[in-house]
Length: 288
Image (tube, rainbow, N blue to C red; front, side, top):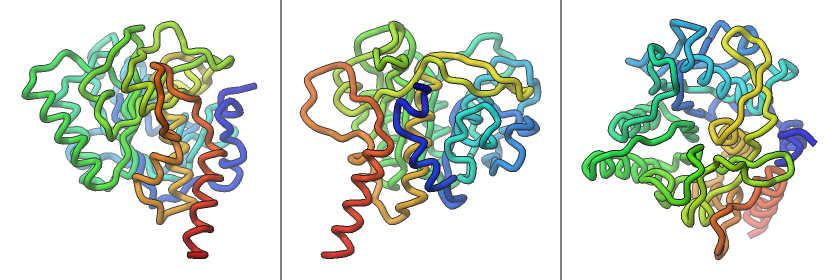
């Protein structure tokens, strides 16, 4: 069983390739727009922020392109290509000069989130570890996340790969959907972060055995919560493409299936169950 099958995405992907009106923001590294697998993808830079890679060999470019390809690559390219017809907004927060993936400063992340909202993002995919921050900068981040809730944009965040038990200012925010990485046997990966807020409001998704593409269009595999998060973001994008009238609150319920959880491990994403939930809700609404 592959990653897509594990979270029951194939049936939903057969129903839709996504809608260009659904804008998914990738807050990550820059993306190699010239990657052959992304030919025809609806990639968009946010004004004032260069989204295209300058150095295809940089760690930031490879990471951003890998995540973008999970969402927007050409179907049959070797990547998951979950929602290729949705619009992908690229908002880099990682500098290409760094040889390792840096952490994201809370203030920088807050600014990036607001930029994505102003560009019309409905879904924000954030695959970045949060650096230690001051109380003021954490408040700025919390206010940016509050603004996402007010505008009805869902924030999907990688839970992190430090193997820790706890939360950060972003994973404990009540509007955020934290994503835990699991293997193909649905076991949490040893390095994935867990915690009460993550278990209560998050979901798990494949973080192992995930194939995507590097900045030269070559297949490669990486693991961790960074690659698990776009499975959730892509699912939400497809569901909003099929059910454009669904509120952000109802969408969160359909995807996270909230109930009283007494575990630090969230349930596995089930894309088809989420679709069926929304379909039943739509029928009930039409009959009311």
